[in-house]
Length: 196
Image (cartoon, rainbow, N blue to C red; front, top):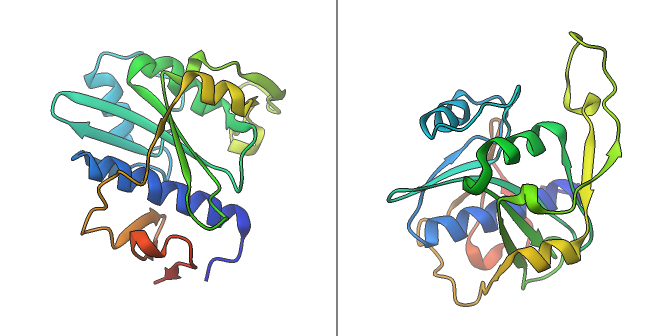
């Protein structure tokens, strides 16, 4: 069972984002495990400049449209935080980068899904300096961190009415993180997910 509040918030946010994209007919690629060569290939294929380390959660393809999606879940609402590699990917991908913010993920539904295209436009404030020497190990905890306020997300984003969203019948495999697969259904997102 998922007992960690942050893990629960993140897993549900990923599930909501995945359901939204599948519901609109997109083909999804989960690249959330990190350093996925498919992200670099997608950026190169679109002619986007490559950041030193690219990072995102999903690549969404729908017809000619490509979205590079970063998903952030919050237990209720409030500031959204990112790290340096996520910000660098927003800058590199420009208008094909999207930030999907899901609020109220540890609360009973309804959840709130806000979509922000080209999230580099948000008012990011640096909250932590990078803690590394040039050429040294660059783990995520050593990267600079940035934060924007929820009102900025709402001002520049578009809220999706999840009540009107088609709920895909194949919505059994919600989230793939490393080797864990969480299963459930759209209607059971408010309950605990079973880890297999």
